[in-house]
Image (cartoon, rainbow, N blue to C red):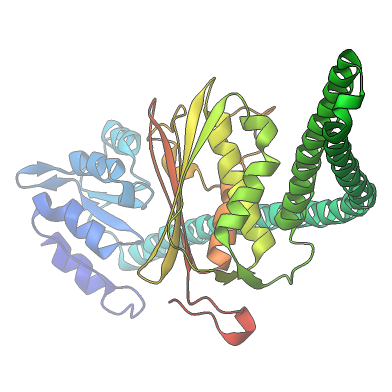
Length: 394
């Protein structure tokens, strides 16, 4: 009866849609489905107390902020007070005047719609802010990479020239020592035995030291090459890229963090080169490997597995570190989120990795279990194309 009366009163208002639920047991489900901007709630109903429904509305996430107008024949102050205490927004005596009812509905509906718009605006603003933070972080990283490139270019130039001279001179010294050894053997009988033994020992030491110097120079040259490879100084921004070369150069850059503490196990598959932004992919490798190393307290292992298939190159980087609690997993890509503490982490590492992966239309997944370690899976599409050519998946 009340519902029909209200329906007739609201019929002339073409901008107000009225939904009536006669079964109080279905009221909450109906409201969740309809998503009203105002709920008119009768206080007295068969089989259900109206105030109990008000409680249920307020306990339902989708309805917790929807304005509720209680309709009742009771005008006792205590009844009204209890209705407001339960969460009602308004209380009017049924059957109200049509003009008053419409005015109250419009008032509460307008306020609720404004609340929804404000909340959505806040969400949009928050999303924009997070996007700006991530973009700023990416710009900072790009600037650091550019600075690193300039630094490495200078270091490589300054080291290569004297290193080349040392390598050449050392080769001459080793070959000279070897020739002296040959001459010594030819004329050894003409020398006193003690002198011959001493000269042989000295020449042997000279050749051995030369070989040690050659190995050291080779290691220095490998470090310079890894630096250049990591920063991709001699390559275009977009280029064909050997991910194994990128992983190895990144590991060389991280050697001081790994040596003597963390063993790296490689399981490299038959993987083709991919078209990508090599410097940014190296940055993704660096961030993931750094997280893996920092997650290991004391000694441990980092395992790197690469495979190709289903149109993607897949890189799985696993560690035996502390792992990530389940409640933190949904947040690990959020800019600023970190479990390392403010003095250790900035919370931008995985956020930047995901931006790099998204930039290449790739995929990233993280699996982790506290106390057992973490596995990060990076996938780059074999069919990726430069944005100006139109990105596509392989």
